[in-house]
Length: 206
Image (cartoon, rainbow, N blue to C red; front, top):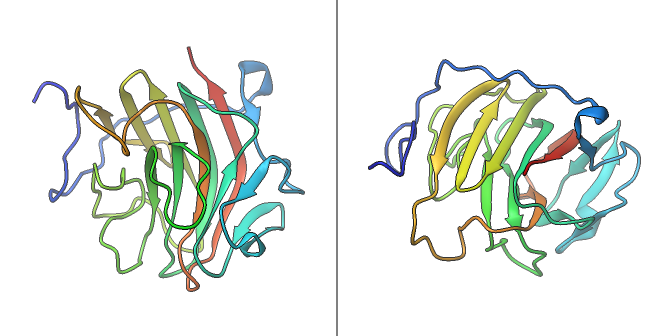
């Protein structure tokens, strides 16, 4: 299908592409820091706010289900990146174009999966429900960089500088998993998961 470029959907394994991505984090290049490394200012939990804290300069999630939203502003086209670490068997995610939710799983927008060894077969870098990657490009208990670029109808997913895929959202997609505009959010999936995020930055794109 011409609407899909370098992407393998649903039940098919999505292979790593050989392309690499050069990036920088200079504030003078238009990058905005979303986390100050000390407080959760600008962030709001959907439920169980006690499950989020700042530990050693990183946003830390622990305990039962909760989603931590960046409520400072919404974004449409952007280059987002953060350093991520998760424990063995842990599960988390990065939501974008999302809306502040109450209890339950966010419905609006998309989720970039974080999962290296959890029983869920959908691994790190997947676009949950849409693009399934079955082999993780990251390792447990080690920091890696996860990046998401959204421009127009195209989503580019990058892990540790390697482009995993580009997904072109086709015409006719209906909510909830649809590009529009919205918030970023981090996921605390379950009591057995411990997720960490630091160097959280975004560069708005035209």
